[in-house]
Length: 255
Length: 288
Image (cartoon, rainbow over all chains, first blue to last red; front, side, top):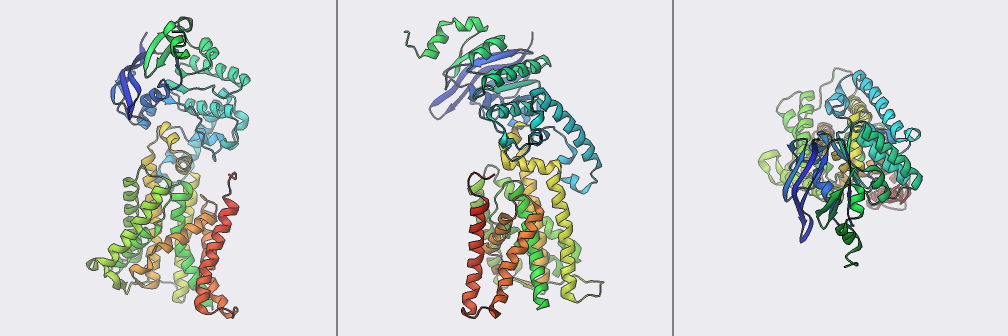
């Protein structure tokens, strides 16, 4: 089984704080992997490093055999490695479907020069894109909201929109930052079934999550971070009985 | 009277270009620009120097658009990480920088003396000169309006709006936001440059003191009053601002209890009050 993503000795400090220090792990292609750890463990920073939004001080990120730690955010996205944000970043004053239509690369009408050419080609492309966007919206269950402004969505629906925006790009791997945080239990069930569908379509998922039920049910492997490095990795049940993990979460009260 | 109305209309048309440009930068892309007058000035001077050197009107117009556009792209390229208030300060500073260069570098374009004798276009149509100039301005503005409307509706305009909403998202979907921002700034500056060219051609004389920050503020007011991001509303509100600024001059025939100087100041007060009222009503918290 090949590794789609390998993190090697990755480090990043902010002033005196070592947010990520000497982090090592890898993610198997086609898996759903969980990334857990107490608040401040460095999980979101790790996502920012992998997705190119923050530059690493040292270490390597290898995606499908290529080193990507020095690439810019937009270049990482183009390789098929997409991310969502912990706090949804919906484009508020644009409709839900516009949020998706933004995504596809290489649109003819997305270049300034297209303003002086006749619009038939742009229109034909746009029709196709709308079709794709509607399919994606149907997958995540947001079809009825297509024409609504994104700002009108509920917190959970915004999470679905984040996911839909990633799916629109037909990614190879998704980094999901707390997809169920602040989402009501019914919608969490729905979200999990969507994630399974996405996984079955061949997308590798790496999920930061605090909801242990979600981790237990979805993930085949869990990586635990604390203070910027990996302290344990294994199947969900192995992790649950790991002393060091319990210690990290409970802050060493048991010691 | 009719001459005066034609003159106001020509000025409104000239400011229309500048406002359409600012609308692309600020209304559509969210890049605040308090120095739009800089590109207006660059366009005016580029046109003046080219036209005086014997370059035909259309070509001189194209030159002024290109030169202003280049300046716009350069400003965007040097300020990639600036947003909101910081960009406002830089652009304001840039416009003063341009004005001071024009004022002090005598070899460039006459310094404080400005440039005189800028030709107007030769017209085959048999209209009186003022009306003919208005016709050309209106025609060119209509083309600019059609193009900016098209941009708003294209996927390109959608990406610009996405940058206004959240630039990080644009990066996360794999687009180079800096490139779009530079293009938006370039386009907005080029439009301001065309406005400057018409300005220079109409007045036939330009000098640095015509390009103070108040021009930027008038245009900003127009874009603010119009729905941010809509070319049509921008043009309508530009006409309103022009009327408010210029049309109120006519009031001196009817208002006798203040003298002319006081009335001149009151006109600016009126614009300020209108601006504050509109900001309070339209941009109050909680209204999207």
